[in-house]
Length: 111
Length: 113
Image (cartoon, rainbow over all chains, first blue to last red; front, side, top):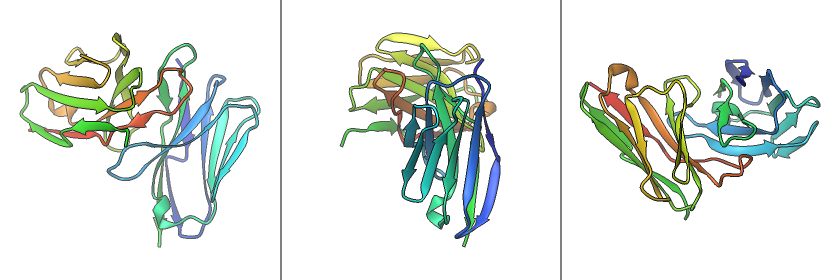
């Protein structure tokens, strides 16, 4: 079945440093979504990428979808303590309404 | 505001005592999902409804059941909770095109004593 792996599993950075999480799939993805879950909270949608090679930016966050649509990345520039949480990439299974969560990357930002 | 609501936010039950978690939505979405999330893990899909069409994941234990009496409400019944069922239970909705945002409720944290 479709599996989505993320690396790293954990990342500790000093405030102001950059952070990147990578998402890799064994199969071609129709789209990729990114969600953020704060500690004790629920996943919150950040963005969706659909096109091969697509790049989208949200302030300090840059999202990329690989040319082969098998990988994606989220890059945060100059992290802040408000960036703390777990970032999940999520894909949908073709022909169904199911969402496949990546393994997640937990980010801690040290002030 | 349109939203996904879960009640209760915290639930304490005894080993083997049935418990029901509820989810309601004002988004009028076709699809409703139940996920189980344990500490430091990704949410795990238990089942989902497209309207009244129920879809169970192959590895969801029989101990977990669900009901969707109408578009707005969906319930998760745990017939005989075990210690391993302690987790956060997340309800989510989506319109049903398969490529759009999922909206999550705040979750119910279940503790089994």
